[in-house]
Image 1 (cartoon, helix red, strand yellow):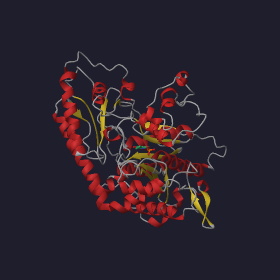
Image 2 (cartoon, rainbow, N blue to C red; image 1 turned 30 degrees about the vertical axis):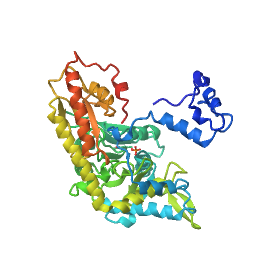
Image 3 (cartoon, rainbow, N blue to C red; image 1 turned 120 degrees about the vertical axis):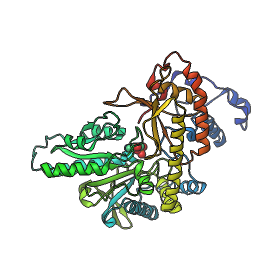
Image 4 (cartoon, rainbow, N blue to C red; image 1 turned 90 degrees about the vertical axis):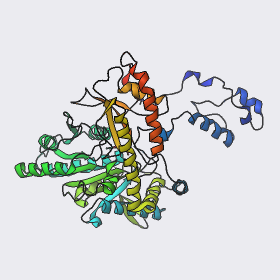
Length: 470
Ligand SMILES: *Cc1c(COP(=O)(O)O)cnc(C)c1O
């Protein structure tokens, strides 16, 4: 995504608009149009402005047909109305909006409980704009703890910290490492292992390792990384070398799936080595975009000097955030959804989504042209590639052609050491029903005869074909 540039030359061309827009004088609206790349000189009626913006937005994709995104695309009318009520509340003004602040506090407490903190009272946490901000905060806490541990060893401060992760991390971890000058040490994929290997991760650790990131729900294929095994490998490392390396779990998606559907899977604060966990409230937390959560096991995991204080009811309240001002609506939407669904409700929603994913994966497999890499039984997400005998077309062709039916399904190449493998990925979300899944398979099946007749794979610019970014 390029950074936005200045105006284009053709900006001033008159566009003929719908004459109805000119309430007082329809003719004017046929010949004059407001500039698009500089501020118009004068105002226009609200209905006209609204119609102009609305018409332009019609050309955006249909969010419900977007099988690429993890982000919530449907909420109830009641949630939308509550969120609209809170659009004018600034999350940082704890003093002015103490009830919104209280709802945030309750959400953190609920998550601490959901993620099995042994002592929920001692958990510290906050809302963020999403997992990316939450991961920055968690990474900063790990880095500061490492710096404290090493203050005596490196008085000059010239040691270079590193963070260990799988090569399949979401891009926010690469950002963290670049922005905060931490070396990213990545465990490559091997064979049919498309995420981090615990032993290989432990082997990359040394005295300058600030932590290891485990991902509950890899964006590449929807698989859970083995968090308990990772902690065990790091226990072994500690026994051998004395190095005590904390784990951060990036549960952007899975931290709101596993607690409801995989209760026996131990990945959370039950593991003493897990120092912090993040999730995206706007993914399987089921809230519209703009909310994430970061929680630390206890105050030792979050160095005090990173926490700032804002005024709150005459006292002060600790905050940890990159942003200052931020809308309160998403936090309110999260609290509403927690209250509305409860554990049983979340279980039902996530189970339905997983059932749709599994069923769809089976039907894609049954078409015969594809090989599944994952089956939608961890995150409700699966990745698949073309079957060994398929030579006439590739995954990029499928992505390009299915888009003509309105479906957005990304195709992309895996990172080291599986750059030979390119896949398609489908993310099932609440609102992607069995009916829609049926329609999708029908559209996919209808493409196949055409694709099989191709002389060879046809998509030249493979990345541009799907415009995919993790
Ligand atoms: C989506 C995602 C992120 C980034 O989260 P945002 O909420 O989009 O900022 C980070 N890590 C993982 C594993 C993700 O799936």
